[in-house]
Amino acid sequence: MLRQIFVNLPIKDMARSQAFFKALGLKFNPRFTNEQGASLEIAENIYAMLLVEPFFQGFTKLPLCDARKATEVLIALSCDSREEVEDMVRKAVAAGGTTPNEPKDYGFMYQHGFADLDGHQWEVFYMNMDAAPAQM
Image (cartoon, rainbow, N blue to C red; front, side, top):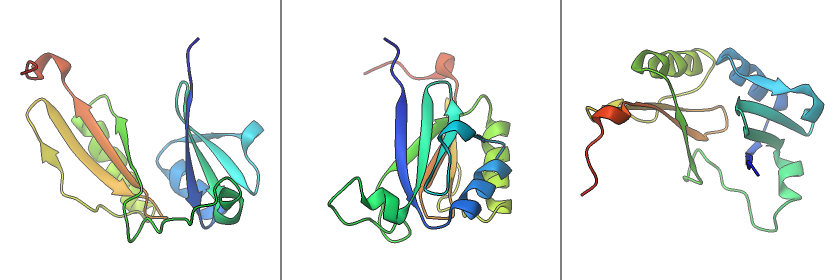
């Protein structure tokens, strides 16, 4: 069985969050999107569920983390080229996101990232597997 992954993220404002990710060229599955939650389609079998904070809180007894003040998770998303990495970061900043870190070039891997409107950090990267160092 091919599994799916759903990363659940608490958000403050559904309309703003959807507009942000649409500005990155991403789409939502309308079948699983309403005023409480939105199914962001990242890739085949990979989704982020954007859940407004009160609804998200119904799934956990633990307090929610303010992602602008503490790191809860780093979401890594692969790209097909360095240009795609920079294009996605550019779109994120234009849509109101920020860049918490400078880009990093490891030779075989290029990495940059952005924080979305709720402070969740998205690390976007391109990796040339043919140039990756051998395991030590």
